Image (cartoon, rainbow, N blue to C red):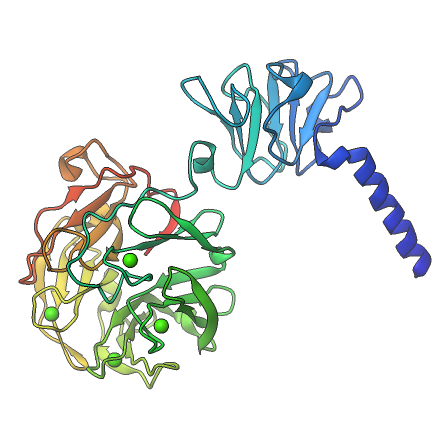
Length: 410
Ligand SMILES: [Ca+2]
Ligand SMILES: [Ca+2]
Ligand SMILES: [Ca+2]
Ligand SMILES: [Ca+2]
């Protein structure tokens, strides 16, 4: 046993020495594409991936003797490789070269630009040219603190986004962002709407795909979420449209809604501060016809939170007013909403006090819908609330036209 361990250590040390910090080693002459090891980004000075090979697992701000020499590449990492025509990940060129992850090593070819002088290896393509997250600028400050869409408790509505690498980012509404966690692709439902735990700070609720467990991540009040608490020990994968709603029962505590897949029933799970109370039937069936539930807060000024639901077959958006523990008769907000991929109850982001609705388009959006030059998927739009239950015409926000490369926006 000891002998084996010693031998293992010796070979590890050998690798480290040969690997020269994992960067830029020359393979023997007559190399070919298949010499690029899995997990590495490789480059050659010929267009046919022959001759001396550069290999690296890390970004390289300068390329030394490889500067301006790279003619072909293979990206066997599980991240994106970005090529720049200047050192330090800058460019004087019209674009940045990118190479998608190709761990299997099935492809090799050009970098998309010549004269490469630095290489960055990053988890998502967006990071070749900027931050990992989209630019979110809340339209204006609210006149009062919103009790939801407000993890840091100031006057700006904030967003959470999960990128394709599973990192969760807090976007405060002033254009920047901060990393608040990784590994969030393990979750297949994410929702938030104000304070669930009873400490006055907004929290996040997430469902773990592999276990069907429901978790509460307590907000720190600064945009971060801290320790998690088990809300449900299993079975939650049998539910759809998990929606943190705000208070529906009338006890001042935030509650959760969900549709039971097998029955189409809409259930209310009352928040107790430390967990969930016994569920109560809100809708006896038919809720599988809805493919989005949204909790925008109070839309008609009666002081009670409303529920929005999109009907899949018609694209109609319905508003359900509420009274304690029950839904009222629904009212039509409008048609044509199937063009939206994502809805966010964002509180008030428009001038004036009524709550608004934030959306992100799916593939079918045109510039006549957005009113700016954004079309197709990934355009962000605001529909200002009228304050009487309806929504004013929406308009596209100019901050970022590429929200579609996020795995979740909420
Ligand atoms: Ca905020
Ligand atoms: Ca809380
Ligand atoms: Ca409640
Ligand atoms: Ca209302």
